Amino acid sequence: MASLCDMNDNTAAEVASLLAPLPSVYANSEFQEDELILKDEILVGIQHSSNKVDCLVCSFCFRFIGSIEKQIGRKLYFKNMGLSGCCGGGGGDSSESSSSNHNSLPQGVVSSLMNGEMALPHTDKFPLPSPLSCPGGCQEAFYCSGSCAEADWESSHSLLCTGERSESISREALGEFIKHSNETNDIFLLAAKAIAFTILRYRELKAEHVNKQAKQSVSKQSLLLEAWKPVSVGYKRRWWDCIALPDDVDPSDEGAFRTQIKDLACTSLELMKTAIFDKECEARIHLHQFDV
Ligand SMILES: [Zn+2]
Ligand SMILES: [Zn+2]
Image 1 (cartoon, helix red, strand yellow):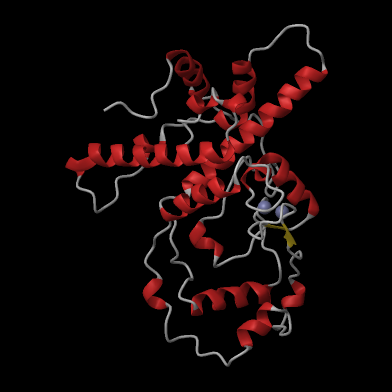
Image 2 (cartoon, protein in one colour):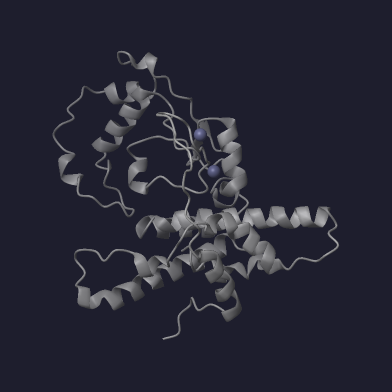
C-alpha cells in the first residue's frame, strides 16, 4: 500500500546529507573540576504529559516554578484525583496502584498548600520564581520569567498556543492534534515544536532576505533547509524505524508494529498540517517525515 509519507527524490537526497553524522568533538586541554565548559540553550524540549501533574515547571527552561508548597500541594491534589504519575502519554509506568489510602490529610491542607496560606519549614531558603501565564492566554504554558515566555513564543509557542492570541491556522485543529498526541504518544508534541521552530525560523530568514533586498535570489527550499539546520544537527533515524519494540509485541510482528507506528505518525502529521502549516511551507512536509 502506498504510504502517505513518501518523499520526493530530490528532497530525500538533501535531507539525507543533513542527517549524516557530524565529526566528533574532543578536548585538547585539561579541565578543572566544576569548570563550565559549555552552556547551551535547549533547542526544543517538552515535559512528558505524565510528568505535568507531578511538577510545575517553566515551559521553556524547565526549572521549577511557584513554591515548594505549591509543588507539593499540586502533587497531592492530582494524587487525590487519581492522576499522579499515571495519566496518558508515553511514560506509562505502573505507579497507579500506589495512589490510594496513604493521603488521609485533613481537609483544606492541600488547598492551603496550593494557595500559599500554609508555609512548610525551611522552604523560604529555597525560593522559586513566581509562575507567569502564557502571553497567548492558553493557561497551559507557564514561565519562570518574561524572557522565557518571550523566547518560547518566538521559538515555537506562538504557533502551538491554544489561547486567544495563538498564531496557528486553527485553534480547533490544534486542539485535535494535541488531543491525538496526548492519547497516543507525546513525542508528536515534541515533533510539533521542532516543526513550529522551523516554520518560524524560515519566516524570519525570508523576511531578513527580503529586507536586505538580496541581489541573488535564494530558493525557498534552501531557506527551508537553513531554517531546519539547528534541528537537523545530530544523527537521527526515523522514529518508526528505531522505536524499541514493546515487551508485549512478538518479534515476529515487528514489521506490522512499525507500519502501525508509521501510520500513527502520518495521522499526527495530517492533524498538525491542518493546525499550523501554511501554503508557503508546503515543501517542508517532506522534511518533517524525519522528525515525526
Ligand atoms: Zn524559564
Ligand atoms: Zn500559550
